[in-house]
Length: 414
Image (cartoon, rainbow, N blue to C red; front, side, top):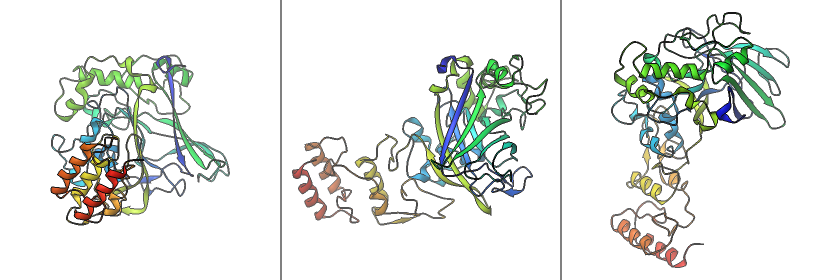
């Protein structure tokens, strides 16, 4: 049905190769056992902005440093649009202050598909050899708190029955299905948009919106189990913004929540209008001090080499990178925990190899506007006399750069 008329939504995330459900990472009293269900556990977060408002929602504290805006810079890119100014450029931006510096906490995330290794996964069903190891060609259904409302709303919330008071993180089922032909793993969530959808999924009478989720937590849903939905979670947020969940809000939770004041929760249930970002990876084989995840993939609205957030990797971005290496290669101190958005190839050094990853279809189009004209000539001269016109990429500005630019300029663009 059209998204605006739906009561249930299906979210599919497709990974190349075989990835298996995550084991635990020694959190919340659990063992460190990331490969419990197979050798390629998936960890990470797919964040969902349901109201397309970057000023509502997000994470706080250390949790925020594990999300998209705090780590997209590790991939040599910034998100396109207004969140570019909030994305961390390096680990120096992890300043622990919500109000100062890069506000990567303010991601706009309202919900997320979460693979954190925070709790044990329950296997609901498995095919194949039933050895509890996810093998190529198998299909499993697993259960856990995989679908969560942003924890930044916790102190504005009146819900209970989740993993902690104020956290809307119901128990849900996920399907992991590996296709041998395509060598891809599809992870599927089916969840209720509203309370009618919850009734349809459980085969039980429709329940009213309340403050309880997962009571009691059983599967299949047993008589008396409490339904949950996106709508119910949003009603609670709106009530919190309106001061109905225990009084007026203050501090960071006010900043993340206040934009929901007087909004209609039912207006944000069309999944085709949601905005998503993703940060996925795996885990270390052995515990590492201060490190939980090994990030491998980021998505979806960024371009490698885009250092100003305009969606393009062009001359303007080369200029920014050239300024970083004007005096030679720059090693990144404490590389791994630390990073730099300018390190496009992730080798721990900002240098000419990174510059080479920002290709120019027409090098003489110096201002990168797609048109070769006198403006490019005068801009190059300005940059040349300022010492920022390394046209040939040979570490510094010299007369050779001027001669090579003039040759390219009069040759013209293809």
